[in-house]
Length: 439
Image 1: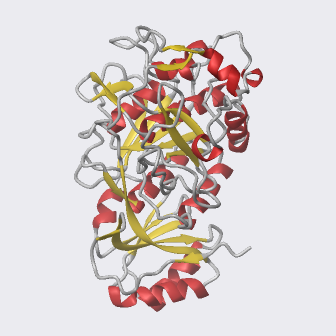
Image 2 (image 1 turned 90 degrees about the vertical axis):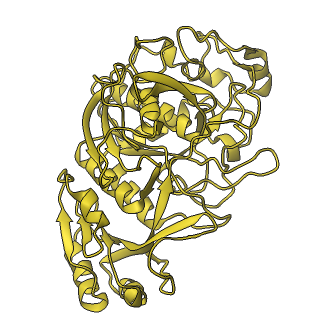
Image 3 (image 1 turned 180 degrees about the vertical axis):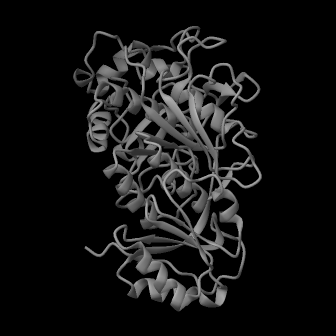
């Protein structure tokens, strides 16, 4: 099957363009045949006069941020076979037609911006109840609406564990994610936070002029949910996989913004570092009926082949019940797990996007995403809401599964995650396989 797609916009002027929730940078992301990367680049050099190419190999990512900001350089990220190409406006049409004709180029798409979009001030009052599952019940046996209703009771005491950890039963798991590498691509981390110092294995900033330190708060919160300690400085416990090793890729600025090139560079770095899971609480809105981005999809396939599962936030653009908007990009790719957010009542949060688009636009699984407590810059804690908060719960559970099944393929981990979910009464459009459950 021919998987190539070319979404050229040669009429677009230079610089960022905003419209219908979409912001372009002026560059193109070009996906290359991994076995013949140079042919595609040579074709673009000769026909479209792209800017000179700088190659980044494997974990050599120290100067990527600067290169991605230079208008006189195209960046070739060899690890996953992709290039972020600078091309003059008058050559954009030629770039697209050249890519269409060149068999070693799989996709060429305009580079877009992505965002961290937590819901910091919920517009609806939080619900007060959620299912209090008994530890001796088997997940498979609890299928019917009546069983779920019968299990509901007052919200559990959060003195020892957050409601989210209790809802996904992480508080009952003997697994800790020991030795499993999880990459969190976000706004960075508070590297001095007493709860997080020991879980961070490596860091890299892909944002020019910014160190990996988190000036936003989003990344620190997500990292805390993945791997906050068993005994935090201040209770309750909030981390799913307390012994996981975190790779911090700063791909979003302190304003919570980042380009496809920065995110893809972070993906390549994480895969080269041996991450078993990549957590991306970021995205950009898409229109109803819009196709998923081929570049991200094939990069996710390549990551899966290397043993890495990518999870991403489904997006917070909805206003339920009347308005349900589609899963954001890149979570709308078939090979990336799209995570919806749940309230304490184990119902979809009002802001959580739904699977209303076609292939790839589905929700795969749902996790706690409303009123989630985790780490904050400055050594403290804060409560945030969003599909961004649900996503690291899933990443943490994947780390637990990887610890329990060290020889499992990425596809095996995905299958185990979905099969272990607790089925819910809500439509699959909104919750996918159901409520995330720790093994």
